[in-house]
Image (cartoon, rainbow, N blue to C red; front, side, top):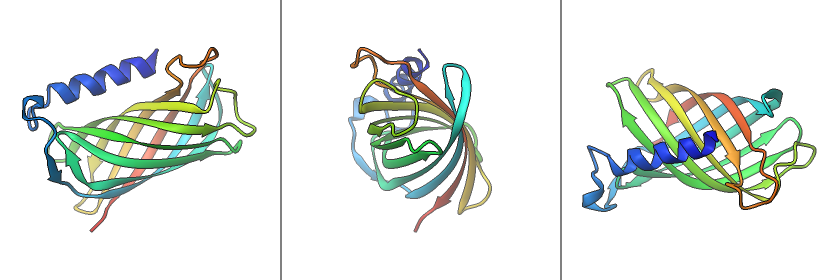
Length: 168
């Protein structure tokens, strides 16, 4: 359920972008690239089942309100997820940003919980705080599932803290 809600919020925030309205299309524009390092609790069936580390890289360009990124994560049970997608940032103040993201990716469960298949979509929300020009910190929550393309689709969530480094 949460994944669908996050995907809808991502879509609405993209369509209703004030700084890059959809009527202007998706023109390419320069953006700050950054690396994000995340530590997470992994939740499955409303129970914390492990830990995850995640690395994400966001490119130095956006298309309309969407900034491209790549991400990889691994859990303490050997679960591996690799994805490519977009983040939509909504600036609330000079220091605070609310982010929505959507990343399709490949999933390899290893000893982790069975999520039903190898193609998983990650969608999430995040509150980000700017510490200085080079560093930010954020708290986020995301959902990963197949979007019902597989018969079995239980989903998995992560609650994460991230440290974000602006790149030159």
